[in-house]
Length: 261
Image (cartoon, rainbow, N blue to C red; front, side, top):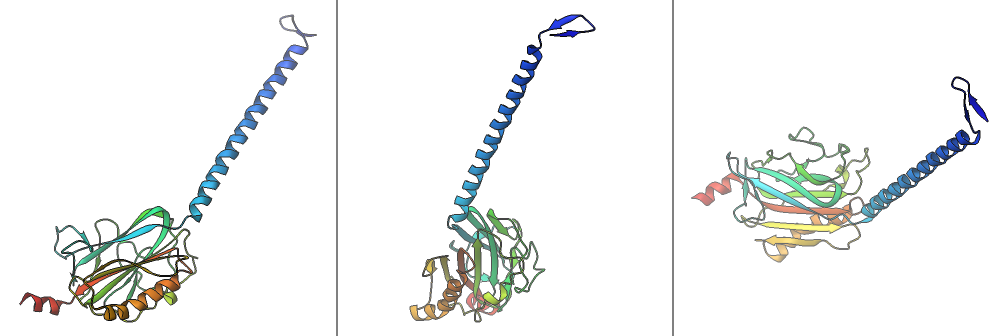
């Protein structure tokens, strides 16, 4: 028996002791339930991430172009009237993925330069050396290059512009240079003012798929121009889960003047 010395009230010894034990049991039960819930949540997140990381990268590269004239809305290169592009015209790129992925946009322009776009450059071509390792960026479902409203300008040289999308689940190593991997001969001449072709290959696939082909030259001439690109894409499967290339006609200024006469 215990007595409250101030008030003289008597309490059975067992009451406070049992009360404390009951309270402690409740706290332990609450703690156990909380730990189990956290464990279940963490396991589900890990399982979800693991499933996503093992799924093949599925995505699409879209290219939009417009003339240098202000106020004109950009249109897809696959849309009638988009081609040929001309000097001073503007190009913007967009990649859409089913799940978040890391993307790398590379532009093989008609002047023979290999231009690193995203993630090396944001809204201006400040980095022009493809040998410089790309900065690390988090994966996303939609990636624009440059940001909406901007654009990459075409030069004066005509031919076939070549844009490449490289995609994978995780960023490439921070010290990895893509330059040695991206070797192509000089760009071929355009054979038609609205020439357009697109290629796609994924890691594990044995051959390159042609997903769009419009206004091409003869099969023999087209094959000669395409084989180098396809070979490059197949070599890149070792490093990337998805490789997509789009080539489209760029008309030189001299050709434009001739066609207007």
